[in-house]
Length: 81
Image 1: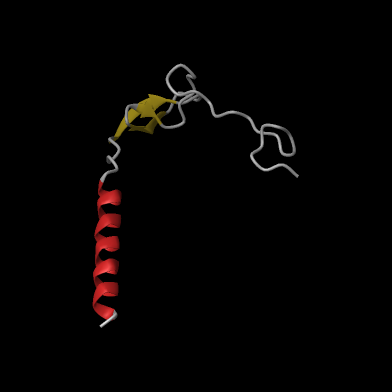
Image 2: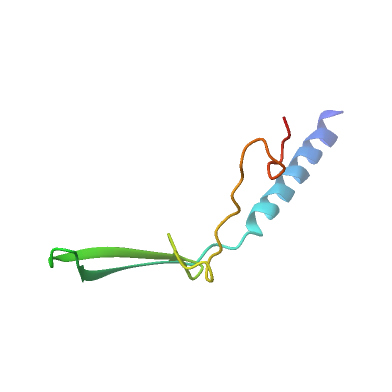
């Protein structure tokens, strides 16, 4: 008789975990190709991609700030030696 409550508990836990996964928004991914001239003057296809409106490998820190620099063994690290 102990199997029935255990089964119900596992079923409830599984259904709650599915709801947690479903709450994440899917990112908006856009890809496009542009023909540009390289340094030698040849036409080259360049692929671009954005995730949620931020260009991948974005160099402008106003649009996408760079992550903080962490030096191992200093106060900026989470784990202290």
